[in-house]
Length: 83
Image (cartoon, rainbow, N blue to C red; front, side, top):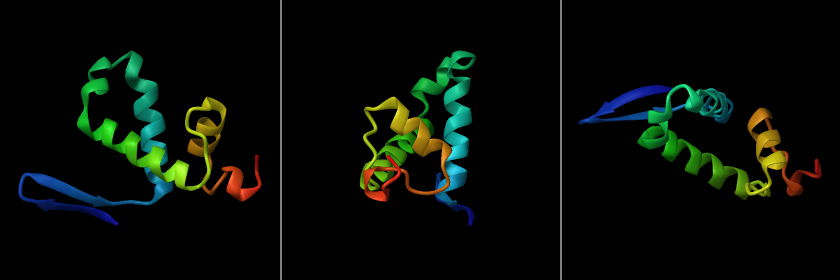
């Protein structure tokens, strides 16, 4: 796990649990830091997490399912039998 400089870009390899944690905290900060709304990192992180959640059977348009999945360390979608 870690960061690697690749030209002007930085590549990272981190656990899904860490990415969810960072996303939850960044999302909570939107009210105090609205510039995050235009941050490519946050937008790309959200898209990655949405795609991952959908692949696990989570309906990301259902805020309850999305929030539950973000707070979990494992699958919570319909395919896991949790909902």
